[in-house]
Image (cartoon, rainbow over all chains, first blue to last red):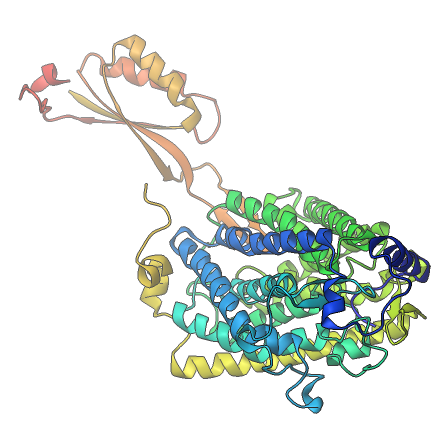
Length: 475
Length: 112
């Protein structure tokens, strides 16, 4: 039904191999007990999931922090680094206290289950070294703590992505308050709607135990909607409500270190293998598919951004190549486990011209100050990827297709590109509306109470010295 | 005594310095500066944002010299820093009223 699609042939092959060799069981067990689940944990899967978690953390710190930091002016460098560092840390604690439970448990009432989880696992109640979490294969489990920390790293990076839209003009403490409220009211519900489900061994008996978009069959392998569209639209709303930087359009605001930006983009690229290939949860053939797709889409997008700059500006820029790589990573995220490597490459080639159009023509035409192009790259790239996933996942194009988990063991589901495209469009729309509207309310309320913007003098002098009492560079 | 201020292209600094050393110039002050003259600036493009930088990086030399050495210094800088292109820079000369060596208190040409 959901995230993982696998062809019928490959699926049954994996299942048979697993049952006969790894655990010497006669047949797959439907709805295994907690004790039985523990015997279905594989050390290789566990190791991969933990390594992936560390890789995704590396995407935030230092990857995203440097990617963003290099693009602002010297006087605001530390504000960006500090915002990312603290958002990551606060979001991590919040995940353990309520986030995981709100995202990955059944609803407080059955009627709430499609939208948000309850508090049964708040404060990590009932999660320890002896509990297991489901994967996308029948009778394959991972330690729940490994799943917990993997998902935690996603909840850490998503709010950090948002700050790029209003970099250089936001007060620190109100931003952290926004992060807490946005995580609770937007991220956890959206993550629940897209990713929560009972698992392949339980869906036959409890088919309604799933988040809304998951139940619809929206395909989002690694978080194109939950992470990128979600953060991208929140950033755009913030940028519009907070307003332009002082001097925007009149003063030059060139990046202070594209060297840092290149290092950051490269760390994002490396870390993204944990993000995408790690999202298969187990270490299998489909994990390798996601890995290769991530590689090829990124190469293609970096090249196509450089080519379009060569054509339009006569000079291919390092910032363009880095932006293209990130756009490719964003676009392939929902498609990573579904596409054929060749269609993933085409997706990479296509996404850069689209994002380029948004960060140059559209942004200049409407004159919004999306400082680091969170909307133009993450939201637009994310939407491109989410819709393209409907096409590239098709078995007719060499994709992995969709799985029907209401059967046990699961089987390949019939696949229709047009029907899937409608489902993807619905998922994108829900995310845009939910995140856009709730973010607008949050920005409004925080602005009226704590205030979002520093004074003009502080903004001119820089956030580093005024908000943090230090300078990034002392020569 | 003369005070010579020369604005030259940064990559010419080492060549000029060597030529002046051969001439017997014992010291100078060098700073990295920015400015504009007839040379056109360059256009930088960062994603959609286009900036024209009209301030270009140059190097400023400051040399205090005796009256008889000054004309030769000017000649050497003019010849060495020359690339026959717009933006090669300028040389300014002003009369120097006094010079004092801080360590010894000597003044006049002996302090140079």
